[in-house]
Image (cartoon, rainbow, N blue to C red):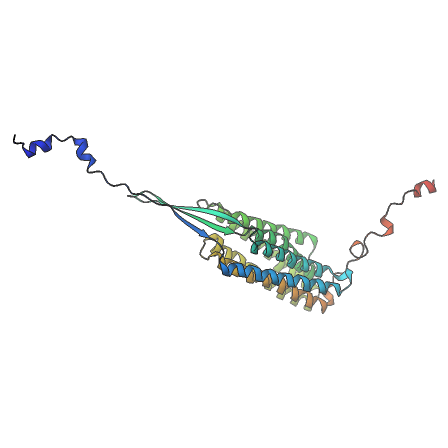
Length: 304
């Protein structure tokens, strides 16, 4: 039997022919990136912990060399470096760390969308450190300038807003504007701090004399310059991830050493040689509870 090939081809079902002409399926494998500290970052954390610990011991020793009534600067400055040493120990030992998950989706016309997942280390212990130490730093500067309680309170509250909104921004969702919104709020709060120190603080310091005014302008300017660098580093590290975790650790470490031990040593040494900056406290700070404030049982009965 002779079969016409044209007729045989025509008899093949259409579904069967379509089966052989289906496009191959494209499989998209999601990409994953883990951003965490390496050897250089870990080493830096331990080195700064040791620096902060040495500063804590040194400032404590300096405090013992002055009367209790004149130790206010020493106590505040020692608490600053002590808190920082605990924070760096937590970060170096692997505690005080969390991971922020970022998902980035790219849309394509002819192939399925691709998703990149990034997990980056966030050192939340650093924000706990800053929320405790930066108000104390502001208190040191405020005492040097002689700021009143109203300006001190506003500056410290603005500082806490700055730190907390920075933490919220660090864990913010990449696909929403809230992340950079929190960052903008933190920057505005920082400008409030600058206003109170640069304007009110400098004016009050100048009233104490040229020496105090000049010293306050130098140490406050030094501090504000360092504090301005913090949000810049945040923006290129936590914010846009242009800098890896090791680079972030090293940059913050340099700023922390300058803003805490170096600041503290400068303040305490200058304070010893500048009596105009003295803040002498008596009463409970120096003497504790005196007999005048105690309750004596039986006095009323004897007087009756």
